[in-house]
Image 1: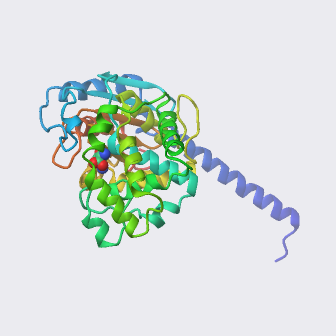
Image 2: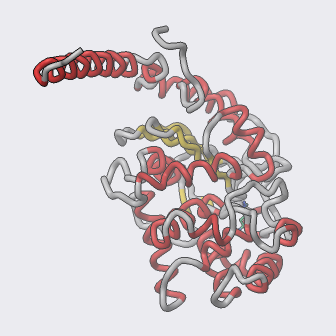
Image 3: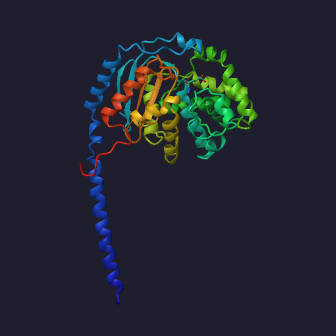
Length: 352
Ligand code: DON
């Protein structure tokens, strides 16, 4: 059978019309998703208050004490902040007291190195696999000669810090601090008492850095890398800072309030994937099972969690569980995210 050119143009125009009609129907269905409809101002404020009231009196856990200054931090500090990707800030409790950012910093140094050296640099040099070992494990290094780890455990994190480009200690440090500050949307500073206390007791991290140097992962001075890492862990943050930093990750790497783009949106899924698999130390699996959220904790008592494209949430409460994660922060974030539909794995059957 012979078809004219006109027949083909009419046929394809018809096909296109059908395709675009079904696309706009899909968009309407997505916009009306029951998950997003939970994110109203009223719901968010109510869920924050509910979690705060529920866990305010909880006395489980204890401050970290392997860094002596952490033991002196007020255990009663408890604040929760949720920031939506359109920059609205919701909060409850103590959102002004600063604690040290500790391991939460590892996410942002990872992002810096990814931006400077490309998405393959970290998988190649330290890996992106959960170790299943404690965060400062030496055994994990020995298993694979410093490969097959990730930038969120100490060996990977100190190596990641060593990869930040710069000609001098100060140039590297100022770049790191400036980058963290851009995520928070204000100038952050170091808590000097925490820095001094950790610098005086970080011999294990020095050993880790030397091992990573011996296996060829750290190129420069391993002690300089350890010291800059110690300083980055001592940056002071309040719950609002952490909430904004988490929201920047949720907003594809752009601070939702200042509008500054800090991470290439194409690199965000990989960064969030590492947070999902290794963000809560060796309890990362349990956390992901319960919440589905990429997250990162620090021994200062903070936790950030990210619901991509929706919100960032943070909580601070210094007492930690046996794995080193804040007891109240975990519980509060898990409850709030569940109530607001934050789990990225959550879906409703089409049309329901
Ligand atoms: O290296 C340390 O021991 C601390 N500066 C950070 C520890 C921490 O928060 C746990 N890390 N995953």
